[in-house]
Length: 292
Image (cartoon, one colour):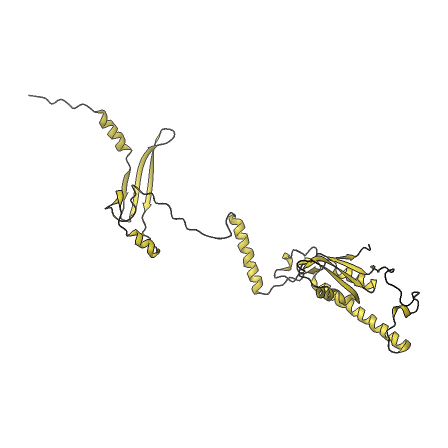
């Protein structure tokens, strides 16, 4: 009886077994979830198992008509005769990344949250007509940036009104004294007044201007006009002149002005009340002008 010799083991069979051991296995369940199991070697040379689960989701999107028509064009070249759509063996599909434009680029989550909270408080304050007692801005007084440097505008207004009342009382008292002394006041030329040593027709070139009652106002905005300066200082006493420095080309304020009073006491009261006063979002600085 003839015996059949056992077949020899081929080296090609070993390679096929190794390839089959590392071949990925794909399963799809009833929910449409695809499970891919792969075996590979890590950096240490050990065999590891990698499992991936993929859920396919059909998304309907609206595109431009021209784009939809191009998708229906017949393929040509090496792709001639294939079905519509990209072929995964020859085409790599990029990830669709939606573009979101905003001012939060490069900012941390905490910073964005803090800005949103501030914006929410600002909207609430605007809806409730909240007004700061110091600078009259649309925020709480505790959040005012000028709370440590600026006096409340209400107190400044009260002090200005009190000074104005004092000036009115002094003017009425002086008018009463003049009426008692000699009836209605009449204008007398400076060179004819009592106590003046100058004669008629004397030139004014030799006389120097008295700047002892002149105030220098700085930190003014470029939108300030002469009338604004006059309205700010007229309540403290009689103003002799107002000079507002302007740019020759644009005509805008250069940031400073001079206000001359007829009485130095009025100038001192104005300097004490307006120095540090918030005007047009700026804090004014008022000091006596230095004579040149």
